[in-house]
Structures are given as structure tokens and as C-alpha cells.
Length: 216
Image (cartoon, rainbow, N blue to C red; front, side, top):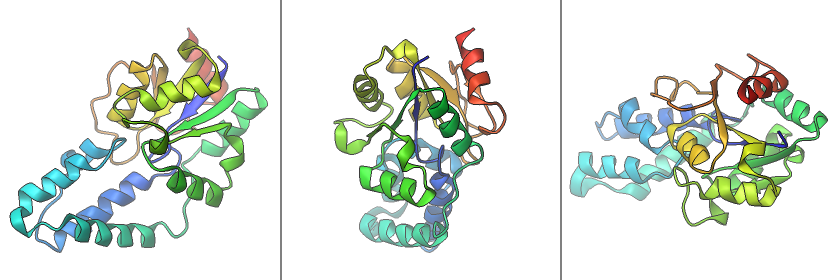
């Protein structure tokens, strides 16, 4: 193994649970319920499915820009003091000590990712950050991971991806990578299949142990 590739939203920082709460609270103002099974369709990818659902529920009264702004405001307020998920920093430190190359592949914008990584004090660990700004198609398409593999100058078999969503898992597998699932509260009930390992959090096993397990 020569490299590790991390997703960002929901994996390094649990923005996803907060986004769900933000959109749920926003749609409550319009007397619309947002079931979790509906919201998870947009996790790891873009908001197309979420906005389609809003349109279906509200019809001609649907103002996507207004809904988005309200949800962003709630999200920003809830994310004032971001904390990395358990074990994340330890994995990055371990990967660095093991001389692995470290990349990030995210369906979010580079600005979004780098701002939070800066706040978390984790930006310096990453050799490459591949974001939606670098590709035509975000996850579940493999483009982000293929771009990361290209930047890392490795064979897909020489890296492992860490993901929290179905869209991310599909993207990593299609790119030829091994994939470890570390779900968060909004993705833990999803039917993950064909992944190489599943952890409750990165504190469950060391990175070295994870690599040993998936290389067997």
C-alpha cells in the first residue's frame, strides 16, 4: 500500500448530520417533512435529488434559492466550532509516519474543504486535494478518485479509500480502489455492499491494522 484517499464531508468532519438537521428544520417552516431515506440520496454527491424532492412537495411555491439560503444559515450557525470525527487525526498522523501519500477526494468545492481543514488544523497532512472544481462529474461517478489516483501516480491497487456514503463507495469501487466504510449517524443504516471493511469510527482500529485486514 502506498496511499490513502479520504472523503471529506461526513467522514473527516460530520457536516452531513448537520446538513440533514438544517434542511429538516428549514422544510419544517414550509410544513414539509424530510425523511432521512430521502436526504441520504444526496449524500456524497450533489443536491439534485434533494431539490427535486422540495419541488415535488412544494410545487410552484418552491423557491430553491430561499430554501438553500435558510439551510445554509442554520448549518453555518451549527458548525461554528467544527470537530474532526474520532480517530481522523490519528489516521493522518499514522499515514504520514508510514510515508503514505495522502489525498482527499470530495464532491464539495475546494474552498469548502480547505477552509474546514484549516480550521481543524489538518490541511498540512494532504499531498493532494481533489474537489468538484477539478472534475466534470462528482460521485457516484469515479472521476474524483481517478483524478486522485493520477495525481498520486499510483496503481488503484496501491491505495485505499475511506468513505461514509453509498455514492462515495460506488465511486471508489468503480475507480478500482479498495474501500473502507466509516458511516456517520445519517448513513449508518444504508445497505453498504462490496466494501472491504466497515468501522464504527477510525478509533476502532489503527490504520496499520486496517491495511493488514484489507490486504489479506
